[in-house]
Image (cartoon, rainbow, N blue to C red):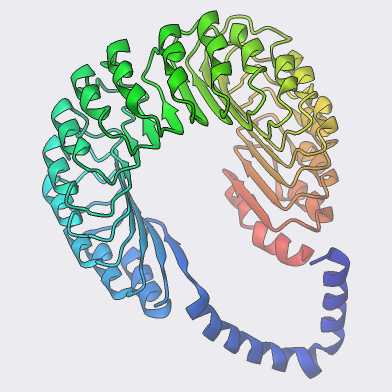
Length: 482
């Protein structure tokens, strides 16, 4: 609703509250509550005090829930979910139970379990009785092993499986995975651990010809011989290559003509490998991590003209070419750019960003040499609506002053900017299109600076983390403004 309309409603309400609005408001509130209990389809309940009471209240009041997310759940918490007859999607993080009660949720079609360290092979056997499941995530559940995979083969409709960071990933486990003919997406990501999945397992992986998405990131036991086996997966559209993929690896993928999303991780890619990117005529999303030759590859990345999304992360470059980002100006379809932990990225590269006319989303994370003095260049990006700046420690009040010239922003997330004061926050009041503003790690701001944002009449979500005395005022300020 437009701000001037809201202002008029508030004025009329103040004038006639005693006569009309109070009585009508109570009636509307009662009918709205009745409607909301049936209209609410999704709920998120976080770990904390009285979680059992919160879940009981939720299942009693919102019986039409179709999706629920829980963190820190116990066995008793999970057991309550059986009282939701329409529940189809459940996400549970950091649970402190073995998940044996999940077998009662027979209506589930999607189940995501992450960091549930008490989940065992026996618990997975119970999950295997949920025959309607089409998507299952068991990520970071360290106590499940390759022996539980055979039970997952009993799920007749399972298409999407995530077993990243588990002990399911072995040549023996792959034998069972290969028998699951319904699978189209599988995630084997294995961060920080030595994966037992080898070229022998890759041979069996090559028989899973229905796969359209495959994540092999951080599987160091895969060699070029192992990668050769996946060339038979001609339906692949989304592929994350094993760590340290080489020029030969990229060049050999020419037969996978349907690749639209590609992930590259490692330091073995050189000029020949970067040139090979042009062979993927449908490539729209590219993710590159931990590659020291990135600055030399930017020219060739700029020739992949169908790119819509580009992610660059964990790049250790002593001197990042000042003109490297200018190469990306040829990507006329690019709408999303994310750069994380690029050591050589400085304010001098901001000029290159100014040429990305179609960019809508820009994320800069842990780029410690960015001070924001180049943010003025971003004002020419008329399509830029979503900006995330995280752990850019050099950002100051003057940096946010330049950022305030990017008037198209609607979603702004700023994290860990210890030098910013109330003056810097006040500068953000010029971003009149903002609807979402997150401020985290701003130790020098006060409620005085927050009050300066009153002119942001379209602001619907304001979050302040790390300053409790300021955060407590957020609700009060929003109710005053709107």
